Length: 381
Ligand code: GLU
Image (cartoon, rainbow, N blue to C red; front, side, top):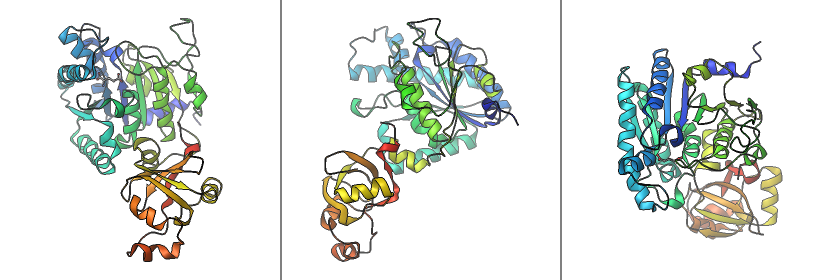
């Protein structure tokens, strides 16, 4: 049996790649050499039946170069304008580079809000499916021009993590300007050794890494590891490596020992829906429960019944995600409510048998069913 964990990469058919602003921009404009080399690499692999989706930053960096302005002290609306200016050149660079091989690039711009809404989320998944059927190569970026600061993705590393269930790749490759994850910050110690393999990635591994981003992009190594953590929960491996290595994607997919390989979690994988509930969508309200209900949820893995509810905060519809909060105010779980906020207020404290009569319509017995609930202690903060 082949013991090399990287040999699983040879079998990957669809790969999600993330490439950051730092390597895509020279500071004076787009680094066309990096883009052309990456597209050469991907096109040759595409000829051999591999499929790719690419999360590419670089719009704001390119807009900044086109307008010949610095990034320091730039207001949000100016950044959004710079993204609008740069995104066109960015996508043109990919379109031109892939066209040389007869392949088609397709631009997808996504906001955090698009993924928050289950219907829009699933709709984007259908778009990805159709793009792969057309043989196109999706090039994804945050729709910076309309993203509001409070609800932005933290960076494109997180955007990549959030769209894994939509793209359905068998591996994630994060391209950056260092050779991989180091045991110490290479900016402090240039001799720092690369960690070749991370098994059972834990929060401690992530926190130990630098969160400092480069001057061009928003994410540091910490956010790359967070993306790898999401991938591992979703059952796929991640390789974090340098974009400057020639034919880097081909080499990674041959299982060569470059960069850092983060194993998928052994504990079984999170479903697409559970990932969406835990990490993608944000709660629309709170359901405060009594101690008894909190204990049943936390220790017995039970659903939340109306009799355990003491209060409701916020306004939500049936099907919306809500936080389940214990009396002291600590959120213990998040799940999809079977009722509107108004209905939960009406049935709080009631026995299961009374619920339909109180609401005067056929309905579920549980406020939040266990199958639609994720405990906070099981999720990355
Ligand atoms: N979406 C931003 C851009 O295209 C980059 C965000 C990031 O650096 O992660 O410029």
